[in-house]
Length: 619
Image 1 (cartoon, rainbow, N blue to C red):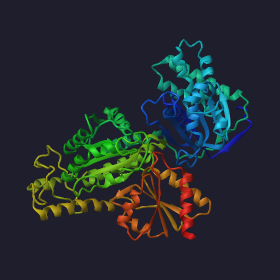
Image 2 (image 1 turned 135 degrees about the vertical axis):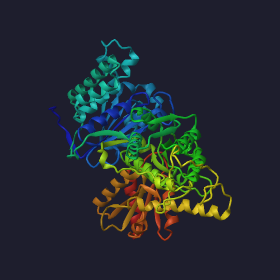
Image 3 (image 1 turned 60 degrees about the vertical axis):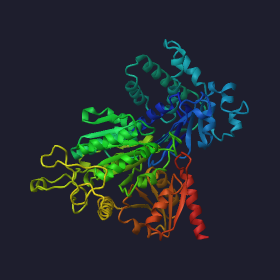
Image 4 (image 1 turned 45 degrees about the vertical axis):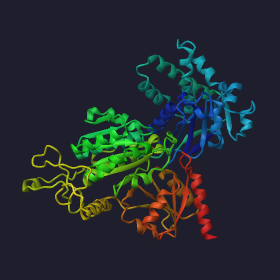
């Protein structure tokens, strides 16, 4: 056991790795997260990529960060970090407000030369005084020590310097008593085909750990309490990977082969990457030439009997809109995944927002209703991807699933479920007896759900045509009759509305006797849940209702909203969900908390605004 004199025992801690986009911060952050998850800690991560493809080295625009919260009852990556690793002055300056008062800041002092300070726009040669850092600063010659540790490695200087991120990781592992054996297992898997790099990184990792145990700097070190977890196999998983796996589970449970027609776009591309690996499970992942081809190929696959999916982000959703309208008119099962990012246009490709809600609900020509779902966390992406597929196949409709860059790139510890934890999916196939009776028409419907029957091409007696022109509700032939068109519009609308009876009721968490309700949707769940917990501990009676099903809304939504004196809607846009709820419930006054900065909420922001709104009401 190491001799540590200033040990803080915490329920959870927050660490942020930060440096140039080529410094390997995402890699070491992910490894630290995986090791912590393997020890039974709950984790939540926030990879913060620079918006520029390759900003000048050492500049403020090129800073890349990876923040992780580790411990118990972890719902967010944390507002501010207990430990910041800053590999250069730009990383320090960019993250000066992200460090808790009294926290630990580890800097590579070798990267704080005069030229480095000028790149980061410092005005003096003393960056710590200039920034008025209220933290325990540990100046470590990380680059020098890395070169010394690898002096006999035979690697060139450029390759040696690339290893310095593992010197920093070793030091952080010492701070948090993370076992190096677990880290080394990840290194072996990552660099199995590069033995020289594997050996170099392992050597530097241990050097960083040993340096930490010998510096006698008097800085705080940390012990993280661990609660007993539900038995099972756990892994660290990000939202995009969880989405892909949820689609695969739905394919298994429905008996339909999975087809993804997609086009690479930040931050959704990893869904395509993950599914492209799964040919062994019968997955067909096709990278198409553009977004329109992506959705149209999926529509063709759906007609042919596949569980059809297309993935994108906001700009691609706009391009796919006409194709999605075709799927609404043809009434084909289709899952459209939108990993939201900052907009409009190219906007902020690597940053997170919730600004595609209205596009998902209404961004098509004509009356074009479809179900809209939203995942609440990285691990919830698995469940909601499965749910999107279930609704699409059982109700024969296109479905849009909204995630976002925060939960798509972020990760959490996830218990791999048993197959029997998820129900069988029963597509609304054309009944065999209906074929035997003869005279079937392609727009005949299930009388309970109003879903059109799905006739797989090649089924004897079920030859049919569908398309984008309006159809006669009885014969399925092309129709321009005004009354028929209105009837078909109402049927398609009612079909979506009836899905409300096939989704869970809206639930609330927080104070049972609360008179204030905080409302959210999608990937803000962790921040809002943590804010409600903090408010309740402070004696403020607040509850949380978080929407994962948006169209149709859960059938008890009106009852829930009417149960509170004050309703506050918090979202990462200018008020889209609040506007949508006002349309449905005009009698309810909705107060608003909004943020559109390309960054997730901070818990303290939510707590402060809720307190302001509650106090203004009571004044």
